[in-house]
Length: 173
Image (tube, rainbow, N blue to C red; front, side, top):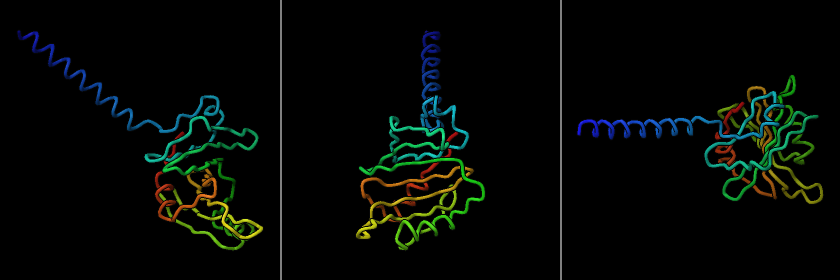
């Protein structure tokens, strides 16, 4: 009888340990399952959205000649195209977006915000023909990685939506 009780207690504790270890592993894994051939080529820290954003694992593409990683994420029916590469030497986010603002946004400007990973710029792109908005993008430099996130299909986010997305970003490899 005592042996049976000990066996039940041991089985219960073993099952509890397995559940706890599995939960710990799930909470601490990277969140980004890069294909092994791409992972082997990347020499910068990969940034990925967490929690509410679903990464399309079939969208990973690595442009070897440009040392650039591309993939798509989505949330609430919106698709975000992600582009990442090593940050160029002497990169100055504000100077870059000021120049781009004049040529790509018809001078309509940009917004700088602080995020958990660093300063980001949010900008919209406009049609040359009628100055209608084409899309929105955000640029972030963090820990040697230059990240561009662009909403596809003429989608638009509020500043709060961008802040939520940018603050969800995490560093991987």
